[in-house]
Length: 141
Figure 1 (cartoon, rainbow, N blue to C red):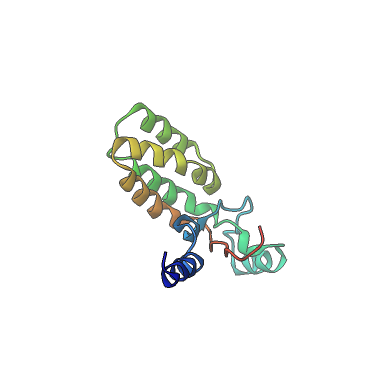
Figure 2 (figure 1 turned 120 degrees about the vertical axis):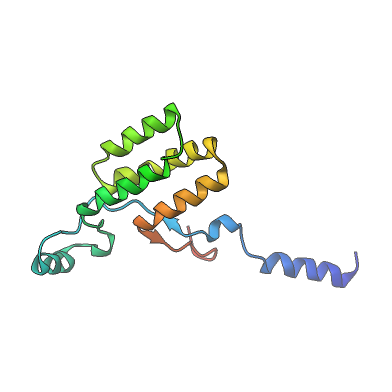
């Protein structure tokens, strides 16, 4: 192999990005602690006193709206698995419980439609949950 080509290949290996999946934003489950729905004073005290206020889940009053969106993603799918998932979504008592249904929702939509459609629908739902930037390949594990 010519010397220039081997140098180029070594350089290319070092400068290419790592696995594309490592560049995705990580969607995290909401905290078990909910931000208060009350007045400004309650919210202020919560954000001042909470040990990690940025990790708090959104107020529980958002649950019905998010639940409706989860149900809408299954509206055009008629199967026993979809019916069981709908029941699980109806029974969810928190955004965290809904977060845990995303994998099953992906599977049900993927089987009924396509993997691409499943990914698209789950990505729309991910906006309701906190995200974290991908880890740097240089950061320790």
